Amino acid sequence: MKGNIGIYLACSIVIACVFQYMPMSQSLIGLKPNFLLLNTLGWIIFVPKRFGVGFSAIMGLIYDLISGSLIGINIISFTLVSAVPVYLIGWLSYFSLKQRCLFILVTILFFEAFNSFLYSFFDIPTNLVQIFFVSITSVCVWPIFDICIRKIPINGPTQHSQF
Image (cartoon, rainbow, N blue to C red; front, side):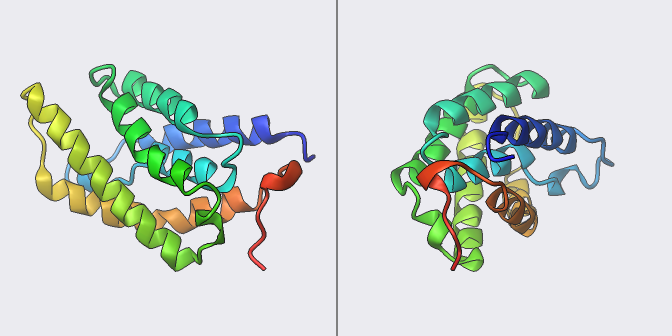
């Protein structure tokens, strides 16, 4: 069971994609968390030796392809955002859940602001208030990702315990 990290990864990506693009009413669309980014950050935080900037670039490409946005905007954003947990390699997994939630809040705020900045270059309208709502709802959903990815059995010295 410990050698099936690829199955867990594939399942988590598919589930994140389904939740990311699940239909919602137009009035609630601004409250939808960024599931793909949360999934990416979870894998980078808890399995830092196997997942890094390249993984986040691939996830950004997936986000670009399934969202229909300009190819490259989310690749750049995902890669830039993932550089911080890669730099803090493994430390974030030792933080408490509250500290990781604060980190995720700041990270999602930066991601959404940077995406809005990039969209402004292409005259694509963005709602700046949505940045805060997406960040708050993403932080509310983060503990689910945190607990699920932390519970995955991983081979080798990359698994961190909370004790």
